[in-house]
Image (tube, rainbow, N blue to C red):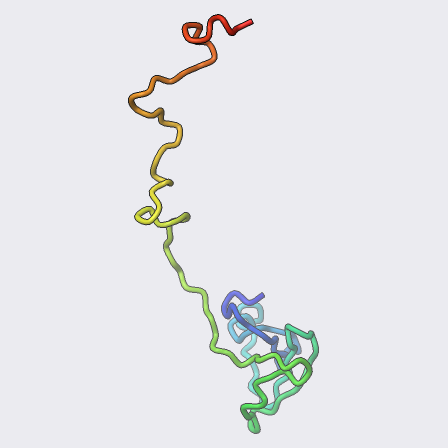
Length: 124
């Protein structure tokens, strides 16, 4: 799994070290050498797990799909963005998370099983 591109559909084989990476940044993090540029790229589809080659010079709209399973692998990349959120529902919409369910209701005294006044004749 690539932590830079969240919706990566293919892995790319680097021409320099012959290892598989999801993006250029993954190659830069794990290898000490620069990525070698090439015009013929080798892809591995993450859906059908099959490999295929594409020539970058002759890349057309039909080449945006895996030739084996027609998975569309040329997509706009979704990158992780830092977000500060409060877990749970919006308190303005649902105030149940603000109310303490354990609080006793006002006006009514709390009853227990140890009150002998009301049910003294029913015990035992």
